[in-house]
Length: 168
Image (tube, rainbow, N blue to C red):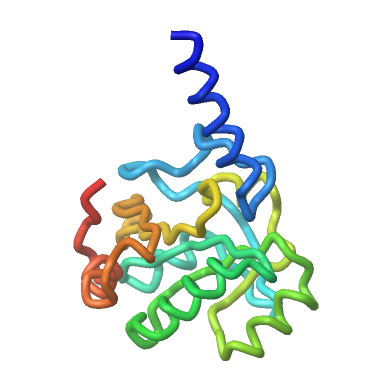
């Protein structure tokens, strides 16, 4: 029994150390069925976003956290960029500095609105250990899907972006 506990603790430790994102606490994650947390954020291009701003589109919307230099983040951002419906509201919170984040976004042709650097208390609500996650909210601001996008096909991801709940 003691060996099993030690093994499990070692696995958890490795997962935490391998994270692209430091200080991750899974208990803080926005859960499916939970309302989007309250915030007022200004993007790098000076546009202010609140949950109401995103809900005013009348469509589902998504929030994702990224970190410059994170290969998984780049892959996920490019995947979402390539399949997201035109004008689909996706807000990206970057835990990197503005210059570094914007240089990477420009290099990869990503034009989602981005907050950089985003407040740590908010990014912790949307950061899962080691992989970026796309949090999809319905038009009323309730989280309906929390997706590690590499686990789904592009075709299925389009369905989730358009309102089909992801089976947790």
